[in-house]
Amino acid sequence: MSQETRLRIRAATEEDLPHIVRLDEEAFPTAPYPYFVLRQLLASFPDFVFVVDMGQDLGGYVLSTPPNEARSWILSLGISPPLQRQGLGRQLMTRILGHLRTRGVHSVTLSVEPRNDTAIALYRSLGFAPDPGGPRPDYFGPGADRLLMTLAL
Ligand SMILES: CC(C)(COP(=O)(O)OP(=O)(O)OC[C@H]1O[C@@H](n2cnc3c(N)ncnc32)[C@H](O)[C@@H]1OP(=O)(O)O)[C@@H](O)C(=O)NCCC(=O)NCCS
Image 1 (cartoon, rainbow, N blue to C red):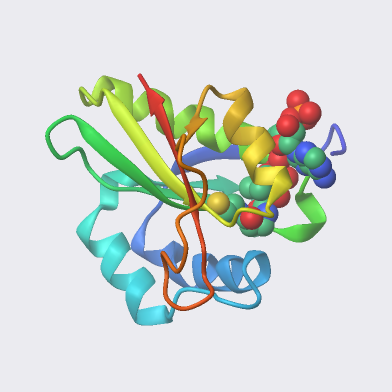
Image 2 (tube, protein in one colour):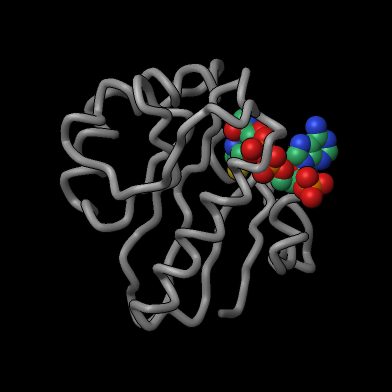
């Protein structure tokens, strides 16, 4: 990323919604969240969505649930494809994990497509451990297996 690129990670606002929708479609072209789902998630968990603000546009976003009995889920992490592999995913994860820690979260879980080596490498490097039983078949419906990974904070 060029030295001149100005970016900051900040909490999302309602005005970010169209940009988050576009980012999600770019990062997850085969199964993006529908617009209405992202609107409802942003409205429901406004303190748990962070974006990479690039000035004119957003470069990535991360979304978690608020804690429930000290446990949270990371529901989504997406970086704009041209900006991937430049450290933004790690920065967003570090930011939301720090935020969850301040909210008293002790355990963070996420699901990942079992062949998504990039994401799994990132999560492992942050301390997430995969379910010992391996991927759960049909977790998101027929043929949509997912590996659950958990981090103790
Ligand atoms: C997965 C994703 C969020 C990672 O974000 P990113 O900004 O590209 O990743 P970073 O540059 O922060 O890299 C973080 C770590 O991920 C791993 N990683 C990143 N790109 C990788 C690649 N091409 N191959 C293998 N590992 C890779 C490495 O462990 C890397 O750490 P390192 O740079 O110290 O080696 C991003 O690629 C993305 O949005 N992908 C599409 C959507 C997606 O799969 N989201 C996750 C769903 S669970």
